[in-house]
Image (cartoon, rainbow, N blue to C red; front, side):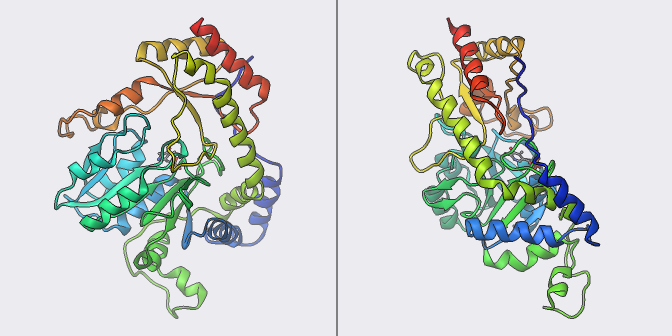
Length: 375
Ligand SMILES: *Cc1c(COP(=O)(O)O)cnc(C)c1O
């Protein structure tokens, strides 16, 4: 058997919508499909305002502009994340302060955040790893007490919740990804959720190259011009049309992905009971959204050997993240603090194949190969 790590789900209806977008006469950004996508996310999750972007990286860069990061401002963020979480703030001149994760969940540790706050701290960025919610009550309380803004990197976290609140709606801003490895996709794609009222108007301006074009087309202002800094963060309506096909199948995609998640979870229980590996620890306040399935091995050599075993049996498992604080780019800039939980997760996490069309027999085969490895 040959099982890839990811296989993008592209329903045929995507083609129809993309042709419609192309034939409609406006295929640039903020067209009909973009508006349909916006309406879906706002109605489904109660986000105050969302803006589609060309990537989650773009949404994070918008967040960095909106939070008004100035050179030397400090941003606290996890080291166990994708580099876009960091780059977005670095591009505005921020000083990055990396925080360690919790011991049992690869999410930022609120106690570490608290220790790292200084008078220069402006923003805390949290990443809901694999869609499992960070400890948002504590984090929002800490941020509120120090008058700090919170950005949620919700790249993994569509349709996941902290208690009853959708992830991405709790901090001042939330950034989502529709990259082909995420739950719903448009190849490259993303979205910014704007939850903080004072950011609503400016978000739209930054999104469209620093112009008030969106307000102009709504008839809110009678001239359209350059009013602020910005960039071209909005996707073409063809990309929105592709995403709209995923939205049309949202419940089906999510049902299937969650089924796969729980299938792995249940079938790997005996190996966890024998002490060979750990399944994801689901915090009491968190939900599962079928983003990815990872296991944690006792040490790096076991993880690497299992990875080799799976690959030589046609199973494309992967691992991530190389800690940002010790990356080639940042290691000389880091303040030298050890981040032991981050290093351990980086050494011991293994991600199993995870995609919409993964079959029960494929999950069985993968689990059987993991069992074989340990026997
Ligand atoms: C995928 C991912 C991103 C970047 O998403 P893009 O849409 O590819 O820009 C950012 N942060 C995290 C945690 C991610 O997993």
